[in-house]
Length: 424
Figure 1 (spheres, rainbow, N blue to C red):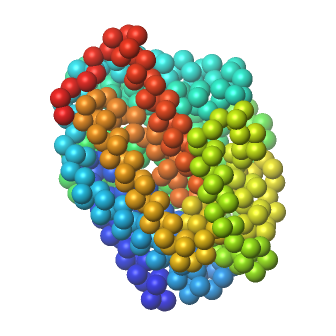
Figure 2 (tube, rainbow, N blue to C red):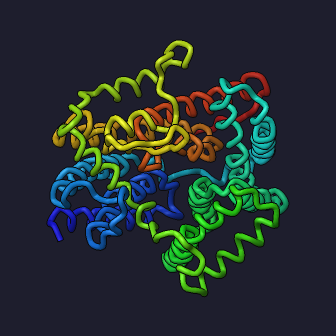
């Protein structure tokens, strides 16, 4: 094992323990972001180098030493800056959650607004797609607020939202949002119930077992559903899930085992390191400039704005083909290398981490004056926590989701006279 690999694995363990320590005390979204990044940028590649699957495409394109010599220091700087910055912020440890039951009626309205936009989003023009997507997610913020209500009937909406997530995932055969929002919901559940470390670890073990089994059956389930399956999808899913738990994996999954590919973002990052600068020059900040413009200007003022999906940057940075209908991101750490080389990429990751801490502090200051804002943090950071997403998507979502949320609070206080402010 390379020294940088060992140091990288140790850093991920430290981040994991920091995340665990935050559960029940605060909402550790930033720690979750670092943990997901560490798993996909370091642990996944380590497993691939240790036991290659020898797939024609999903493999590490550069040697372990070359890869880890860049990625691990970049992760150190990124994670170290974020964790140090969080230590300097004390307000995130004093959420006045006892105030949330007082806004339960507002929470019910927020939930209703989210459900309404969820229903009508398919009928809105494409120009309103992002706005509708953000507001439709208000239903989850509303469910979180109601979870802290003293009314048992209102608290059930929280668990109903989880059931809705599960059924929606079954219908679409897409499970990413289910996993991510389940993590967010668990953070709020833990903040209220303050589980012991033993309970937290037990939950994590059960969660990992469920996610691993889900990954095993996902391809088979999608093949059935996307080919027009007309039967009961819940029964189909349950049957595959039970088979995967109690039968040999090969009996329920005809595809080659590519579970680590889903964890390993490193194959894309290594493809970037193999392509740049051998065949494509470093981009010298070009895609970073594009991301900044995209996050500030609407599309009608920026007609060259990149479309979601990451196809353009993926092809440019890796040199690999990608179908137009396939979404695949190059990750911020891969994009940093492709723009600024090794040292510049490491420094960029440090700056990115400092920016996120600064932004997090701004939001926490907002929460000190309006506790209801706490429930909207997952909506704002929905793309930020994803390790595979490139800068244009992350920054665009972060800024514009914040604008939508802030405008919502301004409107309800200005026109509906909602009393939300309290002393910090």
